[in-house]
Image 1 (spheres, rainbow, N blue to C red):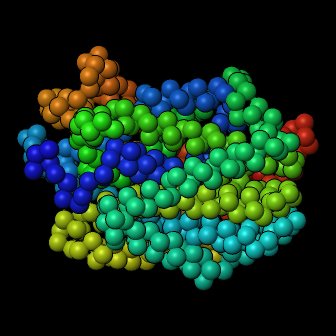
Image 2 (image 1 turned 180 degrees about the horizontal axis):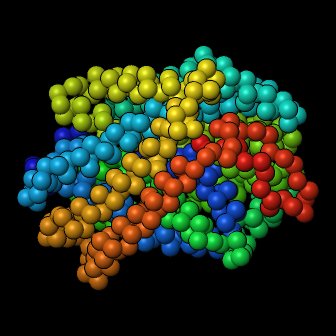
Image 3 (image 1 turned 120 degrees about the vertical axis):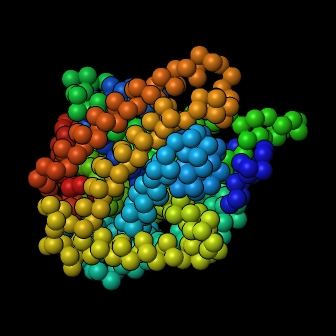
Amino acid sequence: MSKDNTPIHGIWTSRWVFILAAAGSAIGLGNIWKFPYMTGANGGGAFVMVYLVCIACVGMPIMIAEVMLGRRGGMSPVNSMRKLARENGVSSRWTGVGALGALSGFLLLSFYTVIGGWTLFYVWEMASGALHQASASEVQGVFDGIMANPWLVLAGHTTFMVMTMVVIGRGVVRGIEASVRILMPLLFLLLLVLFGYALTSDGFGAALRYLFAVDVSRLTGMSVLAAVGHAFFTLSIGLGAIMAYGAYMPRNTVDGKGVRKPVSIGSTVLTVGVLDTVVALMAGMVIFPVVFANGLAPSEGPGLLFVTLPLAFAEVPLGALFGSLFFILVVCAAWTSSISIAEPPVAWLVEKGFSRPQAAVLVGLLAWTLGIGSALSFNVLSDYTLFGKTFFGLVDFVTINIMLPVGGLLIAIFAGWVMKETHVRKELAMKRFGVYLVWRAVLRVVVPLALGTVFVFSLWQGLKPAAAPESPTVPVEVPAADQGAESVPPGKL
């Protein structure tokens, strides 16, 4: 590796560490509740097939591009894009792509740690047996009690932010790599244990039908757009996290025989995408058997995670144990994601001259301060809205619906149309030229069209009057014959 391209922050010790780190970034709270619900609500197996096509045609091409830009730049997203703009003889304004990603991640971090704090409380609630054999009103009361107490929500927000910044402050190898080496195997182990538990549930067959039975009649144009959007968002694209992690990706690896081999960006990203999808599907096969076995209806968003599932675990044998394991799984997923989205702004400050601990403290304090508005959106500030949205809802909408799609679109344009093709081909080093040509064509044409469509649609949807409150409610119970029906919508998270 040339000295010019050596990452100043460090480098992953192996290709598999990058895979674990990138998978940790991609596997988050959305995998645990959003994808399973979307699958069942949009035609089951038919939606899964469309989603896999979208992953292949939208998610993977742009993720390859983002990793490629990061490894080529070798720095934070901001300075990587500055370096690449200079290298390709184009305007330095392209630096804004990296800045937009880092800002998006910073804003997302400010409210993501609020939600992460909720998961910490639920580990305790489950482990202590407080929810054992609780009624629906009691389960709802626990969640309402947490949300109504601003000091409790702020405590969770603070704890999760500290957890994140302690890891970030230790650096790429001693902090991030060390954490994902523990958290990701733990996440996979917990998922396998819970999957084994779900296999014994009376609701496993109903869950499989809900998730995988092909019902083309429920697959609409909106379903396809939802699949495109989720394929993009689930891989953490456009946040700067994948670009930053790509900067630490080694160019060569040593196999078991001591032979140095180049690290392929394409095959590595493919592995990350497969892991992300498998986890999302397995999460559905863990969640819905417990839900259906207790005659409850699945619901979208926080209602499924923080109300329906605790109610379901309260009724089953060993529910406290497996409920605790489930929420530890959720904490691991949320923690690895928050670490990844905090890295770009921290890396940029380090390049400005701050020590890594100083940068982690500064970013953490600023994000924590901004997150106070999100934490209080469910209690003290719940009646204060702008454009019909609370502070939490507004930051969520601007980040997810505007900044991320724009960032992803600009990455696709730069990698596909602006960057010199000789540099792209050298960095990707794809063995099959035909595969490279397909990737380039998809990145230049299919991805911009898909992201543009999703951006317009999500913007239009987001500006419509809210149809539900931002706090989840207890889902309505449904007869066994109607277990695929939707529950009372819990609102947007």
